[in-house]
Amino acid sequence: MKIALMDSGIGLLPAAAAVRRLRPDADLVLSSDPDSMPWGPRTPEDLTVHALAVAEAAAAYRPDALIVACNTASVHALPALRARLEPGLPVIGTVPAIKPAAAGGGPVAIWATPATTGSPYQRGLIQEFASSAHVTEVACHGLAEAVQHADERAVDAAIAAAAARTPADVRAVVLGCTHYELVAERIRAAVQRPGLPPLVLHGSAGAVAAQALRRIGARPGADTDAAPGLTVLLGGREAELPSSALAYEEGRSLRAVSGSAR
Image (cartoon, rainbow, N blue to C red; front, top):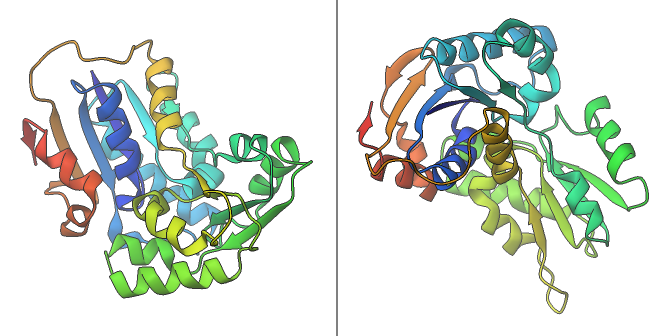
């Protein structure tokens, strides 16, 4: 079984690690184009062009499913990706975990890129799944880029700025950009207020990985003891995992358990 994942950069790592946990035997194709980052400031049309190129590079390796492990690409390019690749290749988008966050009760904050914050797509999800909850949208300027480059100071500064705009009574934070899941515990530490119950973070990696398996009729669990393969594509060309990916546990674990990584 082969699962491909795409993103502008290393934001695909949490979903890839989640797929690997569910199916340790799965071969993974990680397709990104970090030179074109960030995608958020691009027009929807320009972003779609880049997303299609990254997706088609992955599709050339004949995966069983393609995960669009990027909220911004899912917002703006998912219809075009599905029109180009389905039904031959199932395409699974990433949706912010607003529904489970709102179901938990209490005020909710949605941390997302400036391009996603306030978008009709996100506002529609809030209206559909969290209309009775108090929701604060928090645009996290520069956080995805800081995570992409594993820039510790920039990550801390971006998290601190977003935390300052997050109401003190928030009990759940939706991580509305896949890059943010790589620094989830740092976000928790910045937002958690003393004396209040533990903050709950809601990412999308586990849900999107499970949905990909459902789409292809695969069950969790390994079918073989063979070490799975890992193919990394940067701008459509085979490469090593970027050094910044290895700054995070998800990247290190993917490289460690792969039988062939290139």
